[in-house]
Length: 145
Length: 127
Image (cartoon, rainbow over all chains, first blue to last red; front, side):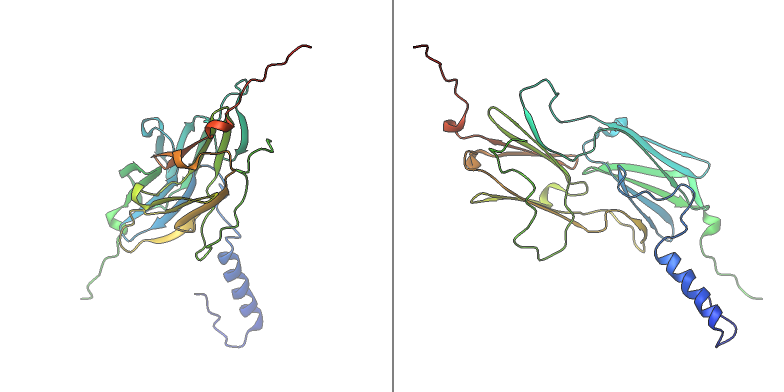
């Protein structure tokens, strides 16, 4: 946490408050943004030894999902076929909310993510990508001589 | 939209004890019944609960993900581990014959219409 060196510096306090607010609301996200509501929905988490990405992409043949890492950017792309009946059939559509069509989402990876140690698994409609962190970035105890 | 069916947005769940996400659905109807598709990613088969009671259809599912030890979420769009959605069915649907399939996180429900509610062609007599 940021602390002012002067206990009663009001401006520093305001500055700190603003900094914390903007962090809480992700006011300054990366240039690629973090568009909510896109398909697939994504959860990203960081573990001590890996970065975990969960893409909620139900109803897709895992063989058609394209996962790519290039220059520290992860791309998940694919296509979800429409399941509603074609317009010329005699069926009537009451609710149409599910996503259909091609999709592409991009996630910026942390610098220590190792693009050569990636596993991707598709289960229950969730694509789980696990990327190991490079060993050099793992916390290491340095002995003092 | 067809006024004859009540399979419509009716999300006021009666037992809203826990907060849950509303899964997106597709609903379409043909001459013999109604088909409902719901996206429930992350729900294994044994954590999906379907219930038809009187004229209420309830779809509930619990999200179970493999999470490594010590993981902290940094960005979460699926922010709750639960889905729930409730629909009111209409009387001409045969709730005894509902069939369900759950694959890759997509639930497909087929609710046939009762025999007497199937369409009949009415002959027009010329006097």
